[in-house]
Image (cartoon, rainbow, N blue to C red; front, side):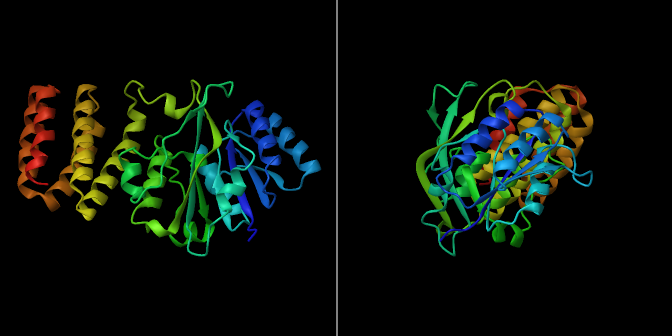
Amino acid sequence: MNPLISVIIPTYKRPHYLRQLLNSLRDQSYENWECIVVDDGKNNDTEILVSSFAKTDNRFSYYKRPENHKKGGNGARNYGLSKSKGEWVQWFDDDDIMLKDYLLNRIVGIDQNTCLSYCTGFYTNQELNNRRLIEVFDSNNLYKDYAIWNLKLLTPSVLFKKSFLLEKNLVFNENILRGQETEFFCRALYNLDRLKSKFSSEGLFLYRQHSKTKTNSNHLSYRPNFTPSTIKIYIDNLKRAIELKDSELIRLFYSRCVALWFRCQRYKDQNHRNLLKSKFLKIIGENYPYLKWRIILVFYFSEITGTASTKLSSYLKLVINEYT
């Protein structure tokens, strides 16, 4: 079994890092792959770099993200998928590195029922030193373990069968500004049969952490432009938790919605506070009508007093226990 793997790399003005990644791909022990680099910034240095690789190895190709895909990594990832020819698809960030057997290890042992192959890797510093193993394990419930962030899957962690992506219409949401991977992986892993995944415990990639790495910037100050993305992720996962009747997940995403509402209140972000309230109360009202009225009263009191009380937030997080 020697299927073609499409490696899709969105990139934006980072030719130095990209060169390191392309070298690591060229050195792979598994040889049946194609590399699709999608330039999100139309950078001349990036085009020159990829063209230099393509001159000696036709497995490399360069594309510019077209205007019909939104600016950003998601648009570039989706366009790369549309250009792919492989039976398997691997998205990879431009500042990370594949170890020598990365592709070979991912593909060995898969069968016709396998939908995705996932692995672990290493966190590193900017110079690719100080390796620390990323917490990934052979999970019996991929969706739940990922949703509660016990299973730390990253973009390089998961190899997807392309037919699985197409059948489920699994593309990245180009309207999501933050948590793109989270939103995508939650959809991909939800209700996935455990037997349709393959796991490798060997560390197979280097995940570079620096000032611009998303996992290194989770404690940003309040950013209103990110809030709609966070609302969508929390509300969608709350719906999934209720469908699964999983009390732990229900309490988790309920609490996150409550905390986000008070955060919007604290930063006087009325538009997003109201957006979250309408979506949150709708799903709570459909499933826990009595709880809905308790939430409404607390929200109303907080709004008329102009306070974002920690006590009020804590109270709402506690009352969900009565209903789950």
